[in-house]
Length: 153
Image (tube, rainbow, N blue to C red; front, side, top):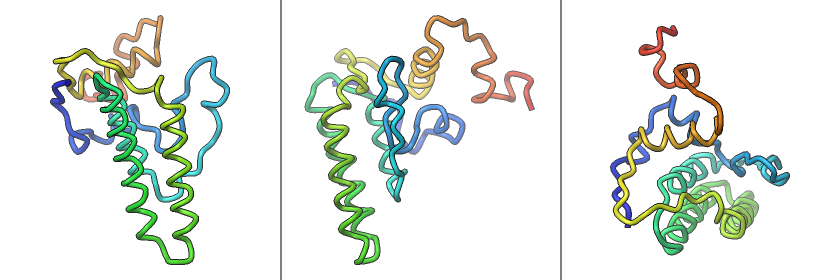
């Protein structure tokens, strides 16, 4: 089990833009299917929460399954709130999205060591490291997150 020192609600707008991409896979080099556009429908919040759960990660496959089930339940909640004539479409899409992350999400879940502390700063640093792998980031890449500290207005 990891020590989660950050909640989804703690993530501000700047960090959300960096950490979450709504529905669809995170772009990954070398995988053609990560660039397939996925319709948001009304699931953006559920997708963002799922991105958060995957970034926080865990130690066991059971923790990943909890994140996937929470994702499906969030989408089902949205589907059940749609007009009756659209519910079947949203429920079907929720099931397909859930199956897709269950099948293809293993490599995107952050596997951590037991007792690891996960903070918002750590999530941001890990994401920047992933995006700028092999590139010296310096302050330029961080300017969007903390413009007041970078002299950027």
